[in-house]
Structures are given as structure tokens and as C-alpha cells.
Amino acid sequence: MLGQYLYTAAMSISPDRESLLNEVYDEEHIPALKAVPGVLDVRRFRRIDPPGIWYLAVYEIASLDVPSSQGWLAARDLGRWPLEVRPFISGLQNGLYARQRDFDVGRSPAGNGEPGALLIVRGSPGDAGPQLESVVGLMRRTDGTTAAASYVEVRDGSVMIASRATNPDALRLTCASIRELLPAAITIEAYAPTGHG
Image (cartoon, rainbow, N blue to C red; front, top):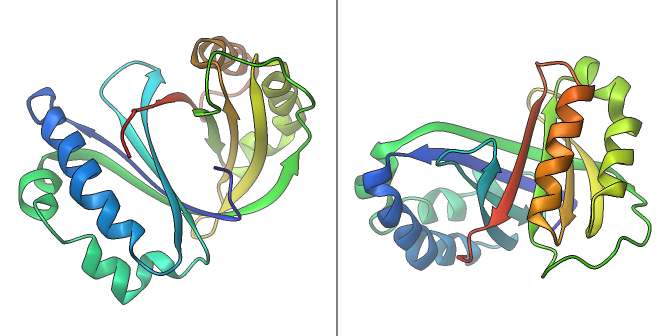
């Protein structure tokens, strides 16, 4: 899932509410939002590097105005989400991204499953931009990488580089290599599919 336009929602939740978050997200929230015109696909991930309870939902959307549409705004408040889950979410970070370019990742060896793992590098253009080719080079060498693209956040101009891979363990190693290369102001995270959504 490296579509033309992406809406992302990253969040943490207390351990005692984690099970409820997954249940409501998968059984109510995603089906309601998938029914909104312009929502093409939704995938959920749990962060594996750095560790901690942190989830990411990535919505592939047909246009940048989908998350502000009446359908989206109504769907996000259906079910148990607004009263039983949303009040217990912390660190919510939303992003609205337009794809800038795709990167040739060549033929990577097949990993250990579907191309569901995700590596994200985010930062200001001044921090992330100069190292773009080096980051993409490391992504290319990650076992099982199947796609990579750069995006710009349409509201603040920050840059996101995303790659998909079949091997979550290899992504962890790539995260460590990228951290050595980039300034501390850059966010570097690896995610594995939740098995939900």
C-alpha cells in the first residue's frame, strides 16, 4: 500500500485498553471508514522499532479531501470509538500525504511472508532531503523490500519516505543503520502488520 494519497493515524494507548482498541478498530472503525467514498484501502500496523505500544493506520485515499468529507467525519464517530476508545488514546499524530516519487527497489529476495511490513522515515525537507538517496539505498538492501516512495505532508511540508517489505526483522536492522546516518530530528520507525484490519 503505497498509494498516491495517504492519510495516517499513529497513536498509543494504555495496556489495559489495547485489546479494546484492536477490537473496536477492526470490527467497527475500519469498516465504517472503508465505506466512505474515496477510501481505497486501510492497513493497520504495530510499531516494532522502537518498541512500545504504538499503532499506525494507513488509509489509501482517492483525493486529499476525503478525510475532511462529511462521510468521513460522520463515520469516524460511529460505534464505541468516540466514547470507549478515543478518550484513552495518547500521542495521536495524523498525516495527510501526497506521493512525490516512486523508487526503484530492484528485485529483492523474497522475505518470510506478504509484503506487509512498513518502514517510515519522516522529517523536515532540510533534515531528510539531503540524505534521501542514502536512505533509499539502505531500503533497497533490506531483505524482501517490495516498494518504496517519498511523500510530502500537505499541511506542514514534512517529508516521509515509506517502504514495504516482507521481512520485519530485516526492517529493524535497517532502522538501526538509518539512525546512524540521519540527524536525531528524523523519525525512523518500523511496523509489522497487526493481523487486523
